[in-house]
Length: 497
Image (cartoon, rainbow, N blue to C red):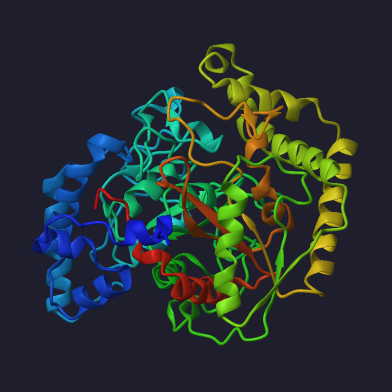
């Protein structure tokens, strides 16, 4: 009997071991422990990851606007001196990090992938980056993102294309594509990202790592001009395993009075033990939503094969369908997304000189948003509310919902987006990733976990989304950890590392 793609990848030869290579391969939890026990210095950690970046980044272009290394080395020495005095800033003490190039970071260049902001150095931290900096992270540069985070493929006119960690000829996904590749190739111990339309989940699936979209209110999302309607875009973690996700989420999450939708919670729980008995847990398999979603041949069978790992945990898996008009849900998503895009970027569109530098997809979103009436937005919000109730009803039958993370394998890196999937023409630039809007619209926690490797040569990753009920962030991480323990997916790394 032939081995599975996952088994073949797991048995592939690794590069020759070296002290630096061993260090960058440590799980983030183990790395944090080694730093705090002073088994390794922050300077050694920085040097190891800088060497890994120098080796891999020219091939994949995941990290951009890299900072001058010498001031970083001075800062790493300061982190070591703090530990020598018994002072730890937090679990990320001495961790090299490259915040996603969408939100501002004090002192670093923030372009949002747009030529309008090329070379712009910002003066404040986004709230999630405030927390990461306060927990001891060293900001070494930025992770690449598409223009304004639009689209599930990471390319922009400022920095170019980010390439897949398993096959550089293919897409890294987006919009947190740089983060996903950097994590997969051990260029960062873990990474932040943001997710509106699968921007943490698609790159996780395409690069065989884990990406978590927290529920609305779990992690502060600011600064922002508007703090009540902005519920679709959320910040979250990406990592090579689920405990590492929890480590970063324990820093990112928590109440912030500047963000009224954030909730009171103790974020330290995410860094605690994730082991749990799932005997008798009911899993609802959404599949391709009864044929509604176009899928590339080979994706669904791989995902269905991965479901057996839930069986091994003692779960029961059954096919379920939401009671909703899925085309109306899609149209509502288009309207609500465009409403938000127009609110954020109409000021750029209204200036003809700046409009000329916007990507066509951004112009399309803004123009659609500007054409909406107040009643249009209210109707779309009502459809969204009905969608939430449809999923809530499903959670009376099952404990979790599962469906593919992406409808396609990683596509050619030079292709802007798939125009056709499974014989169906895509009518918008993001219809090929419709599968991710289920959790976003309902504000539910969703974890992308690897599901295996497929495609013609068995080397293109696919993923599953694990979706939990309202505010069940910890429970979703626990299920994802149990699934990984059963399937061993986090042991499968890119052949390049």
